[in-house]
Image (cartoon, rainbow, N blue to C red; front, side):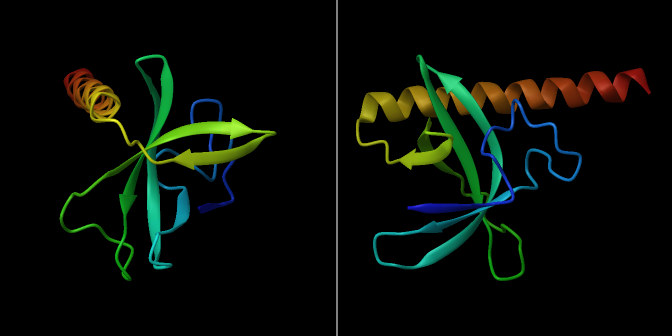
Length: 116
């Protein structure tokens, strides 16, 4: 389903100086065999599970519409695995968790701006 490029998939434990959340990429192969390059925004926990938020990129490496893909995330023998979220309640929990992450990021940016 996916190929991580130079990324362990674990942004929280990543010690790489070349990689940061939002800069590592993953190539998704969709059900119709189309490939989509995505930037990894974050891996986060919600409702006792881990999820990954991906920002699909166009051929210029940009995202014009702000669309984000959410997948269930796990590691199997050290290999990142993405799974579709089929259940509406689980998707709602994953979406809420992503919204909380966004709120935390905005708060951190506001605090950093105030400290300058």
